[in-house]
Length: 282
Image (cartoon, rainbow, N blue to C red; front, top):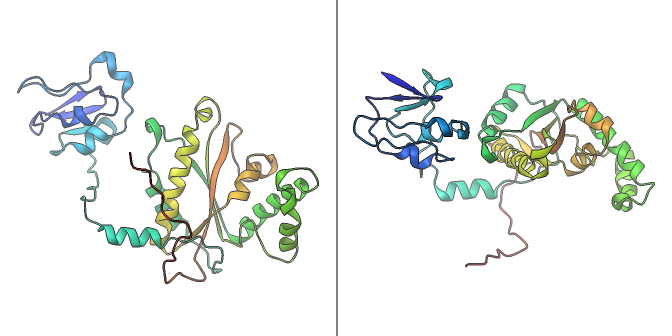
């Protein structure tokens, strides 16, 4: 029989009173069972400290703890430590390249959804989960976004803006039919975060970059290539017509973006890095 403990159900028959849930609790609010008949509990004075992060649930070796909203749902088993060898993982990560030349075929929304669902599990400070997404799917739609970005960049070139020295070259490319902003990609993935108090700490920006990195790493497993869209992001943060075209709410801002699509060419070797690894050991 389950006992409800502030959003957590503890199964008396499965609970071994091992104390793991208390030890891994992010905010240390779960009190250990102090005898063989008691169960782990959250004192009422600490209830507000629960982040609903799920640590107590996923680290419980017997499955005795389930969060209230997950009761009756069978959780997917976690990958066992060592299930991917260091060599395989290392080769996969080092094979990642920025892709700037794409094949014309479209990318299914279902494929992109699978990638973004994986990115939901990226690390997030205090389990805040502030990242939301805008996906522009379709080469023509992405080109329209690129054109808006170029409008702003060309206007900046008429001023003493730091980027002005690069505008003539960017304009030359653009006028010659070369999309230097979105590279002709069929997909643009934008991560946006709330503005306000949390934003000033850098917390939400960091969360967005971590989530986008998950997308970046996950995409090749689905046959896709990606490239970070830095120019577009800087413009979207300063040019309301672009943020409006991306349907970014007034109380949120673009924190990062990736181009995506099926690569026209694929890397077959891993290059050497031009700079050596530098580590300071303390």
